[in-house]
Length: 293
Image (cartoon, rainbow, N blue to C red; front, top):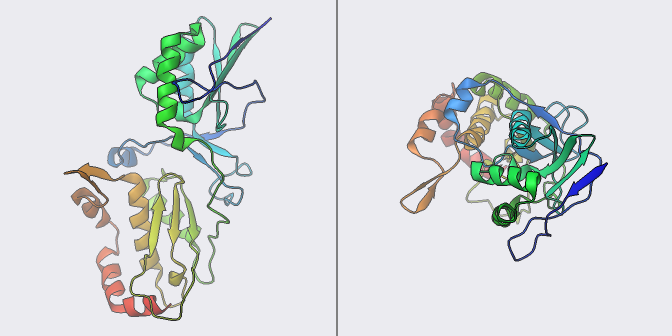
């Protein structure tokens, strides 16, 4: 005996996308106990990330699954759905941009496939999810529809990351990342790292150089390839990497109507890097070489 739940297609009106049953997406999860990191980090906007095919297995094992999900968050939502239902619920998390929610009943078990945006949804949205799956509540469907529309930026899009390159001619970014992650973040950060592109040079000396950047949506750190030089010390690359890792651990805040990328607590945390002052001095002395690199 099978029963299926469905919701209206996502449209300009508040609604929820409907999908077909399919084989559950394989998910790899982790739930680290990094107390220090949890104390420092503000709540994250997502507990799932997309993993490109070129992601190194040293960061994401099991042949780089498409979706990396915080297993603790998945289990928490699964328990909430089971507690609100008269039947046990088996939950699979998806990255499908067309089928946000689908569920079916088979042999007394509810099998639900739900988009990862609901893992860190507010409690009222998750409660609405329970009501919708349990009884097809129309008011709950409208609330969920509003939430999907507000989070449309988290729907899967074609990746623009391109190929990830972690090993340079002189420095290995993956080694740098793992060392800093273990030493300063208790191994709690799950990020991608890559050397950036060199871009086009016109022959003229550049006036500025952005040594590192962090994409919150992709959880991707890019390091400028000008740093992949024999004469650039390892501790300076670590300094740049540590700065970008902090942007993940301490997201931007709002203050007096503008975003604060480097609030006082960020600058204070930055000084915990062992070679902080040494790296600043090296940058000041060698900036002219970096601009020519």
